[in-house]
Image (cartoon, rainbow, N blue to C red):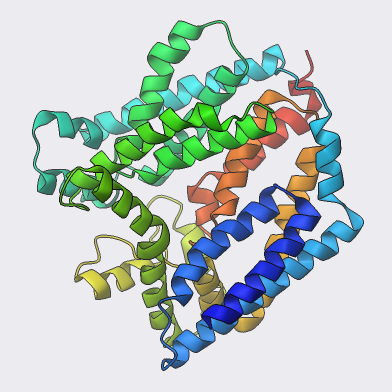
Length: 408
């Protein structure tokens, strides 16, 4: 299975790169490999569920690649990317910058309000001599405590809109630098790490580098020190959350690599093994997930149930792969159809982005959309809402498609 997957993947990623170069559809396959190579290494050929899972992964990869190639026979992304690189970068209009200021201030206020209601910031607990057990409990309570503070809604602002707005303002070289760097940037940083969910700081950092790439400002030299800082923060978080026994370079690197290549893959495999033995829901689980976005309505419980089977408590969520989620809702046919629909969607939004003017704010927004869609090999349908993808697409449409907003 390992050899056949590697061979198939190499062929598919080569064909995809030829069609789209370094753009979203290609980036998606890179993260697809990280997710499912780690999964395949853990497959048990004696289990029927694991063999079937391999079949689903192979189907998804084939139909995703086929749709990407088919799309680019009519709308060439690689050709459009060449043209896009020749377009000069434009700063946002005064009105668009005003919108980013409003979004940044509103998001900052809601971020501070969330931590005020919560009563603590997990990252700051580290500096107040709290034990690792206390910090771990505080982290779980921040999103699964007895008192509900609508973390999903606040996350849209503190994890997505605030970083996007701040980076857009920085990239536009706005004049009010003191407010930006002394107030908004610190709020954004402590908001990202304040619940102990280290991933969003890394997500923001990578998205920022993607925006630098599209703005023709990306340099490997310039990211070395920031990368080390991000990894250090990740390591500190891992240590105080009890994920590693010591705070050293070796343990930090080991924990980071495990988080990327092992933990999520093992959890999602356990989740699929559970899903394989229960009936397909024909979209009902996704429906429950979507309505669960609204306050007072319970969403899908699958990830809580599997987490309980693994850890003995349902106060947490086990990872679920996108393929596993599709199968649970629509079966094999769903995996085939949705892999094609996803490929079409990623190629379509990339092509439409490359058709627009090279405006700073739009590049920043699309860079975040690119990263979050690229890692969509894990998660269910609610991923698109929780990670702010839908929100960013709507904001991008109203700022840059409805042209009245970006005209001077």
